[in-house]
View 1: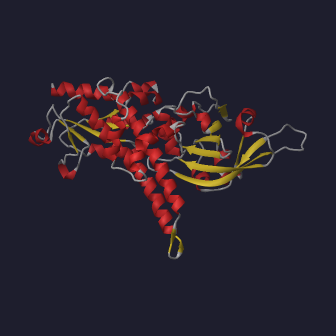
View 2: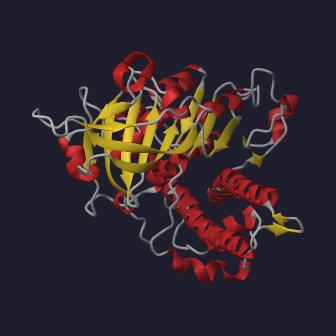
View 3: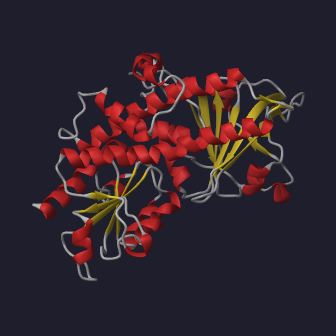
Length: 405
């Protein structure tokens, strides 16, 4: 199945490290950034005082992130003057521009519908590292560095689509209609996540965990995500067509409630499907484990090896046979929750799908005796210095199999 390319969504991208003049209107008395000739040739154009619709996105700390819809104006500050043209992009004040500061990175992209994406990420953050990798571009000097997207760019892999989803880009596989026959039986109703996960594995029988556990996990997740989005589109379309009306007129509360349910279902489903497919991998290797066992203080590690009885009978210092594995589709600051689970196991393991976690975060994990497990197809989103430390799912399986031999 085709997976699309960045050119399906964006015409081009410019990246720059914000200076005080760019980012702090109170200091500089300006609300603008200068654009380059290459940016204008790549995607911005040179239409004086062109007003673009714009989406402003702040990708702050581990749990922070917000979006505002607004506009931005591109203009020549020296038009009808003898000196050379000087193009600038004027932005209005909003929550995102007020949050940004000197040193942050601005990613300025134009999508295929003509909307500008004004994305700001703090220096050294996971979001910044992810976007550097996604767009294959890093700031140099004081001006924008830019590139145009084309059909020659590689197809979007799992990690790329993960990041696009994180910043709010809605996407569907180019040939997603081929999935309709698989989901036809559900009509406009969502099945339980476990049933959907089973269906995803059954409908790509050529994928075997025994051949490559990392590739299998990603393939199953990828396929289930495509099935889910196709069914979601059908369910949401049906609900919108039915309209939001009640005895008093337009049902605003009903619309808001439905919208929230769509977002919440997306967030919770991925975590559950990750655990479902991970359990299938463990079964394929006949690894003894228990899922969701209750340990001290009512904690429930996602996976405990080999079983709860061995854990309970182990001394306070632990048992060499014991292993625990947390599973979180997105890591962010929640990795610290794993540290409190299964007190008898000193070194924790956490599997996540998140690409490009910052080096400062992975350094903190290592210092906290937590080993990060990342499916190998996602390793490419990490710099070489971090890849040497990361474990793949195959590495983790080898470790547990050795203990259980």
